[in-house]
Amino acid sequence: MIGTVELHAQILEQAKAYCEAVWYARTETFEEMCHERFAMNLIDPEGPTYWDKASFIERVRGRSPGEGPASYEVLDIDVMGDQIARVHLWVDIPGTRFEDHLGFVNEDGSWKLLTKVFRTKARLNKE
Image (tube, rainbow, N blue to C red; front, side, top):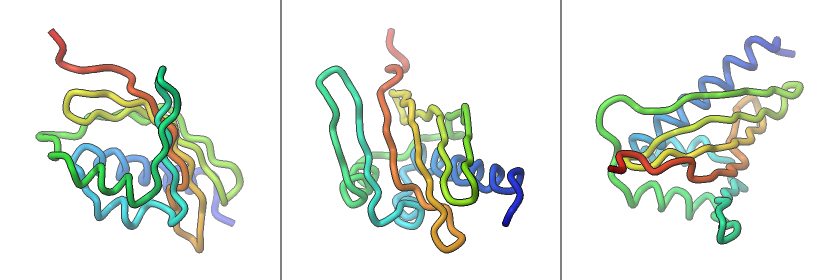
């Protein structure tokens, strides 16, 4: 079994790759990172909205990448054994900051993103 520090480092790398892929609209990262049963859920005042892996990748494909360095912060990582992990972070796409809660599972030695529950945290650059 891999040690907790190494598992935490692996999840941190996945979280950073996720944030970079969000900012730069890198669909190829999500095609590899997301589990085949990936589910994404937006929580807002109108109620939840749901997407599967293909819908999520199309949303990413449909927007322009951010310019300059990616804007994000990993707030918390919780690794349970060597099979599941949770990540809490915020990440920007140009004009909007999102708060994401990500669920990863270890499948055959590879951490796959299985769940994403998120909300809009702030609209940026408002005057």
